[in-house]
Length: 466
Image 1 (cartoon, rainbow, N blue to C red):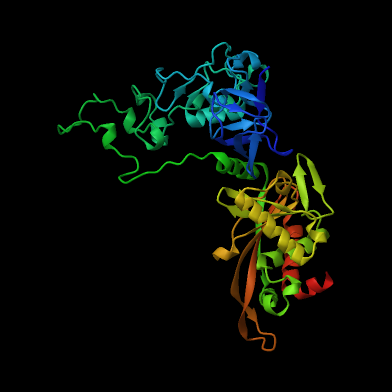
Image 2: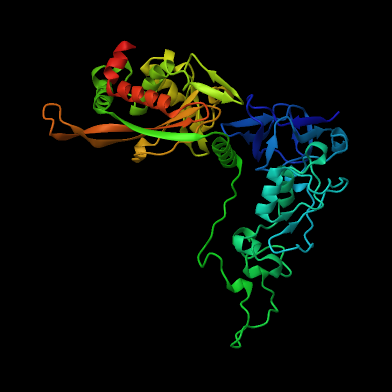
């Protein structure tokens, strides 16, 4: 009996994975332990074993496809076996779901920039106007008519994903082309704009009457949308697409508000220098690798327990606060942004936090991070200080309610202690704290940020207190 290889679930919060690369092809003979594909989430990369001995009868998705977990991605069986029978006679999933919606290529749009879409065979169209607000907004934005489009929502209602599926593979329109209305005549299957977009020039017929003065009509190809010069197109897919979707969802589903502050950094710099110099004087302490970011992580782990509303997750209408601090640490990798988690950070020493943060960062960069190392954070720290950034707006790592951005160390004017009229300059490290204003108000967040700045300013005392 044929074996159906499904997309495995990589963690409780992962809903889909991107097929990064197939390691086999149809017709290959595999063993149970043979790596069939390499897949990735927004957090890590994993190998998917074949799971059965036999021949690859059918591969249902392509490289780069985003596949829901637990969905069939390949069929393995005996040579000549009917792979369709193994799937119940359905080819669902083949070549990706977006390729299954029929969109006629020869139909004439009712107006420029309006794509006429058609229901897939075998599905009846819902009653006129039976669509969700988001579907109607997307259709209006993209110039799509909902007539004849079958819905996949409850009772056949047209929802947003039905509109998106209908648009798959079809050229889009520029704003000017959409606004052209019924002035447009026959439209090409692909436009002359970037990525095949139909431009206003494409809506001009080749037989248009010449303007006064005897000069002929300008051909669409003669009106470059972006001028001259090379243009490189890079598909947004894989982990980059997943990160993009998560960031957009974070902003769309929470009321994000950023506060900025700066903490005196003289003692921070002094401690960092002494620890770095300890490589020669006291190597047994193991403090030489400690960085400024490690010291900030330590300070955050000690301050957060006093402000539990910051060490929390918002899931639906429920706010979950945590006794222990599980610090997410944003890591820049060749594959994109990843956030490994230093578990129980408030119980770890400075050296332990430093060591664990470096271990996790290395695992992310070489692709060996495990699912449990990339989930479970209750508060995230992201550091752009090494790039000289003086302030920014970090995006919350949902469902967390706050994220701390660490900025660069800069000289700032301070009032002289002995001379009230004197001004001196002292190093300060900047912090940008973004909160979800749905559950955290500005004043409590400001108190947390003030306490953190005070802890960093007196970091030697914080370390002495353990």
